[in-house]
Length: 340
Length: 90
Image (cartoon, rainbow over all chains, first blue to last red; front, side, top):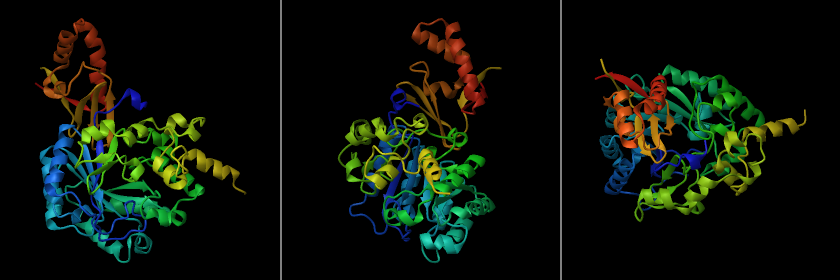
């Protein structure tokens, strides 16, 4: 797909990090969540943003954070979004579900819930998400399971949980949920854990083959650059940042994606500019839409991934003109040149 | 019996400069239809048959209705096959 041929007047979906507050301290947290950010958006401001997004016909808002259920007005905001007909996906750590939240999600055609779990056993999960979290998350999943709620378990694939992915799938199925895997990327707290938790080239090859063999596993973001051709047909062949998606942070700043919340990629703030204006005119957004990493242009797979995930390239090399270091060509090359 | 076109369950659509963008949230998929200004979201509200849509396009573009039908019907068939739209008895 050439974006120039299909420019979008608004995102298909948005990531909205509604708060930076979180009760967990996961070592791979992409947004380094802990305490609420200073000056987070209040309910009226959020409602105004929703009105803009509804006007632009944005189809879906994906809530993350931070833990969205810690935002004091989250459920009223969710109800307001649904009244505007926008689909929502709530990414939660599953430890703070209340009866009110479960009721709000149940039987609601505009809700999808994604619970984060990073291991099929407590010893693996708890090393990533914190001591005692496995049992608390499972209790949360049990509260949601069996209800009329589209549910998935989301796992960020790391060297710690890589071997447990088939068990994760079975675990998800046992709760009537799907397994969704996300790429581990070196932003937020993951910068500190990147070297120890990233997958090796051999693991990337195995992951790619596993995903290729099992189309029921959902892959949320940027798997196109590490996936074989059979899997690629299921999704994008280019980074969606600024083309199909964007990210709103807790204070209303707009960025290309949740992994690119850096000063250099700042699009604008919704307290000062409209979303439409930022989407159409922000210099950072225009730059991202044109981005074709120089080091990838001679690659025979360029048309299949267009350089892969810019967030990985940027945080590993500080250079957006470098390739996604985990792309299929990179790990294939690494494996071919590795001593036997 | 007239069969009208309606968006399939939970499918959304919006107009873009190049045509229509359909969103299938259950499958997290998008569908791009390069229809320029021929088609609008209203054509899939369950009240327009393919013949009605063709007649509307022909009227607005001054093209012969037969020519519009030759382009439009394979498209609506494809959208039905892909479960983007469904038939609705009108």
